[in-house]
Image 1 (spheres, rainbow, N blue to C red):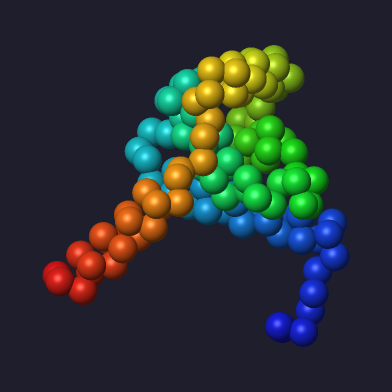
Image 2: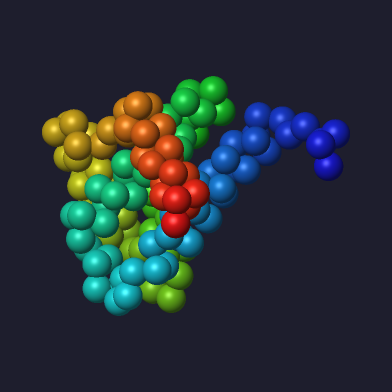
Length: 125
């Protein structure tokens, strides 16, 4: 399978799918997640993770990160899809978070140190 190289459109879909899948797996661990559907905190978490996972790839593959956030919400709340009103509210919330500088990628040093500490804990325990 290493011989297969995806084109930019397929690569874009693959990157978005990986991001949505990772977020869905992690957030599905939260009990009563449906109660946080309109939560600003959930929106901020999703936006920051999407920014972290796709920040470098978004320009190269022309990925619309706002659309990825919508896809994450669709996957998380598949039983009750987003309405147009909810999409507008979510879009305004994302724009507000972006304007206030609350959507940021984690600095590389913090990410590396966290990974190293987790690895060290596994080795020692």
